[in-house]
Image 1 (tube, rainbow, N blue to C red):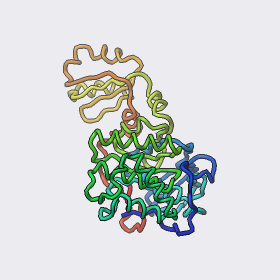
Image 2: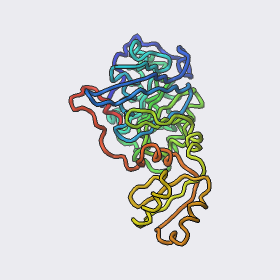
Image 3: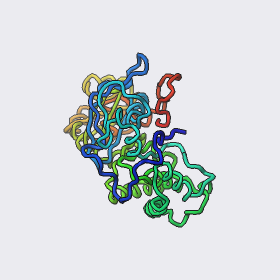
Image 4: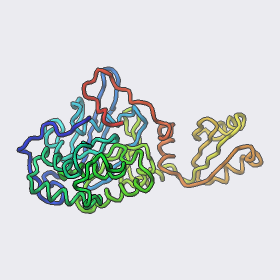
Length: 346
């Protein structure tokens, strides 16, 4: 299990307000020319970005793109090599313990102690971060109310449903009032109703405390609601901005043809070289879809299916990386000998 409380002692600052700690100013994440290598393998190649406080920020990229490395650097689980990186105004090199106190984490895999009760899980977390007994009681009541688990204080975590466990993990992640909550695939394995509930609770937490969110996910539709999105591949940020801005960069409408015969696919590729072709699927962003449909003419009946619709964030991702998020399931390539490699992130 990956723990983030290393370096936190009984003398940690006690935060008593409902809002997050306002000690520092500036962006919640600031990266300037961040580079990292595993031996001769480059993982990050000059990442630079700034994320304002209170922002819902989504980090998208295929496995092996550098997401895990960047998040591990943010969490101080990997040592900085080149560049500057700050979290909540704190330099990750010089203020690693304070950075960890400014962060909350919700892992993809379950990480509760199922032998403890709901309240005991929160109380233990609060003790690690130096909260007094009174602060732990008050804060636990607050966060359990937000995630609608108030009546489950004395229930053993083992008996909770998967969705309820995830809600408890969110409550635990914000128990110490972090500036930034990192969410690694937070809704994986949840049903539709539970997924919507998770995001409703996270939205409530943001409204109440100005909490910043960093999301890494394969559920690209969840990133559509983000304030800012960074698409990263091969250790480089290929695009950074609001989802609407990124979609607008593609322009026009998306024409998709599925089940295209090989000979017609070759002709389409030659006629529209800017298109993305995967297998027997053809995708093209154009201002006037009628141009493509008119060129096809009667041959449109030779394809299995076609659609014309506005571009999505997945289309932006596909255009930039040449692959779809749902196809990315391979393990992240990291050296087996690495003692700390951010393996809590996928």
